[in-house]
Image 1 (cartoon, rainbow, N blue to C red):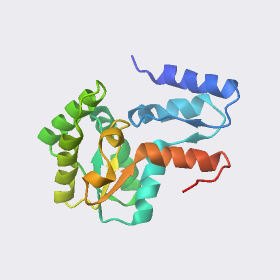
Image 2: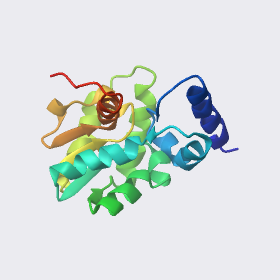
Image 3: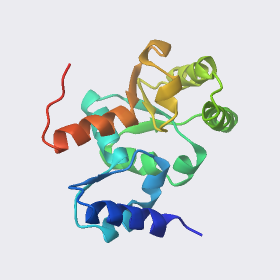
Image 4: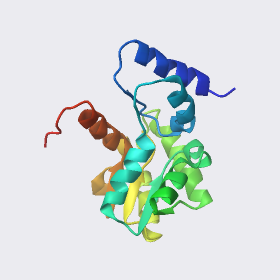
Length: 172
């Protein structure tokens, strides 16, 4: 069964507990954004939309995406990038299988940084000028030092947008 109703109920519970707005630090779970928005009256900050907006500000010609299979199957970044007029570069199927394996292994504490960097460089070789870390685990194992292009962490973007939305200022 779809987890949409349960995720929406959790968002409603946060709202009922006094949350002024809702964020969700999982790219793939944004496939249920419509369910969440239907269940709440407070604002919902979309990790996907905010990340794509941050990328669009850089005005790249091509954007590479490192994301989990379910995120890709839901076409979250593909649709958002298309809407923003961004040319999205995805890994070839075999490399995507490796990316999913690395994401899974990173959850168990395996060191996968070097292998994830190889995948990022494949995206660069395909013309990506910006790499989106479109899975919460990716920026944990991949840093800006691992790539030649700009690395945009969807997690960092969401945190920064939430801080500003809450009325605080970013430091540093």
